[in-house]
Length: 356
Image (cartoon, rainbow, N blue to C red):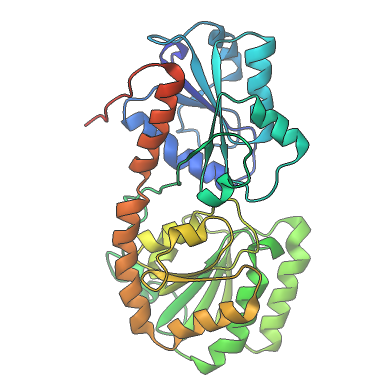
């Protein structure tokens, strides 16, 4: 069990279902702890290996942490901001409240009120920051480039699967209208008959409310006679090798918070075609690591994809550049260091040094 006296930052996670926030927390907190930062999660829906405080330990937060006058409560959702306000203002716990905003829309009056009570705010992109009405710091998400890395053997290619063809094109994430899965499938139905060396895969959870949407896409594929070349994998146990097996990754979201999948793909040495939802435009070096098109627009998406299907060599060239791009500008260690700077300013203590 963690010692609360040594925890300076609490990162609540008040949602059981997997989300982009979950992915961020799972990757980021171990990287922050490797820097020597006393940080822990609080709440359900995370792996048992994550450093976590229990709700039974909450009363310990009334006591100041070792070496600081406050702790940071790092919220990423409305319910977590509200809990922080209650703990700080009603229960008088020595907390400084930090909120990370990924939303790319005008906030509701309620959310604006919550944000106004924060001691500091971080935006995950310049675009999300443009919707904030308070001073903020922009810190782009990073990814673990040890976990997401280029192919290392035959199993990291299409040869490591039972799928036909020479090249894989993929679209990963929850299967629903918001994610643009239908735009990807429509493009594949139109394009794959002209490019017989390519096979398409879709991977991601289909929740009960979106089952009809997914079933409709599968029916369209069957009518086109492409069921063996446009394959729904479902939710796989480990998506990382599938990124490495791709020649091209497509992120066709209509709207997004930040969106990590293009970074995960590029770190895996895969070129990317994406909409301009979320922070995708800020992630992709257009014409060097991939292409960006207007969100929700089918024809520009289809045409951008076709440029790669017609020229796999271009995809391989952009994939090589993508690895260097992500490692230079989107490494997880950079995000961890930038956040620690915010924590240090809130706590009035020096930042820690990375542990060897």
